[in-house]
Length: 490
Image 1 (tube, rainbow, N blue to C red):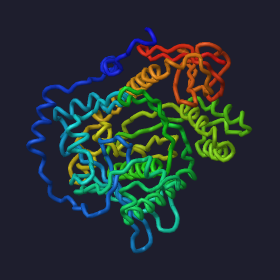
Image 2: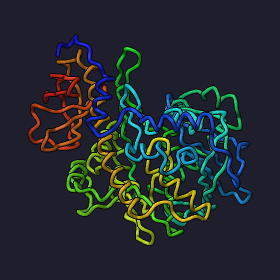
Image 3: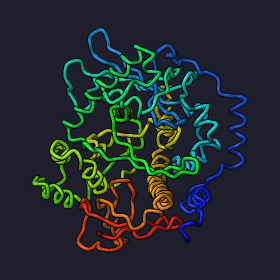
Image 4: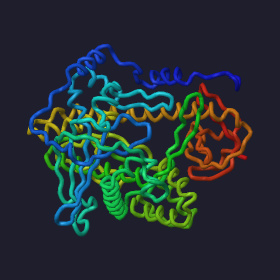
């Protein structure tokens, strides 16, 4: 392909969806159900608490419209703090067995290709009727928890919790970049925040609570990972490769969601309800993690130990903050991806190595992840005192399909990111970059350049390198159609 030949990224995204087992278009019966919902939305059920007066807010990406969660925190008379997390009641619009549900059960996830989003649910729902958009009354399933007043008795800090249905109204739709810069003292408050002292106080309280939750997780071995989230985006006719660092706003939402997912998992377990859990098993390449630590003068035990690994990560972040994101990326690759599994009622949980928690499910993004929608139905049945809507066999089959589709999603999004990056980088062939090795497989050795953050294959000079090694590379070839970005060791 000539460097001047245009490449149709959107057409390639649609084709890749089909090749990876996804359907880019909705069946006719799904469209019919959506049309009916728009003209005849579900009625407000009885027993729903009215929490519309609370100062709810959401924090998400600048361009996000599929808003799944909103947050509110307050201080109780005894000095303890309470967090409420409202999760969009998608099930109210998408009941089990409906055409929309059957389609979502096959797709399992929203795909973000960088040129177009392929939503698990029709966008009339996911970015409209079931999205917690600012100023709109919406049904939610609220996960509420109170933190211990003095000190944490457990790794969760949660003294009490309850889950219930409510009617809410998002008072401020905010974005990570603006709120994060303000909380970190690196920028002015976003316009909505600057205009409201109560909102400023609310966000600062949420930040304080999140820091406490995070500190307690780290004490118990949760990994302090700080990778740079990279994505190539098509902005008009311009292709850009962007990187987003963690900030206080991204960490706030991450900490709240981990806490909420833990509360949900423990609640279902206590009620004897089978569920789908999200786990990361003990890493198979612990030996390489040990070798990476040894190269930095740190001794890790021979058997996997998340607490020891996190102690190493914290020390490296302190000693070499400039390269900590590189080390984090290597550790993430060596830990491997998570998976969904059935947890039968009464069975001991398998746990999540990276988060150092025994109780973890996915419940906070039902607009874009199918396991979260399934979990929501389990919770609503529990609240109503009804039997579980799913058998163990159904949950096991859903977990397996979601794990399979998660792998396909990662491959598809990675391919599209490479295609976009290949188009963006095709004019930089011959330039040299600093890079880190991110994978060594029978199919090849893979690297990520550090500025800009671009993934590719090391096709020359790859012998003797392993995950986590840093080296200089030269860009020698790009092929947008195949998503190839080839480097040689410089």
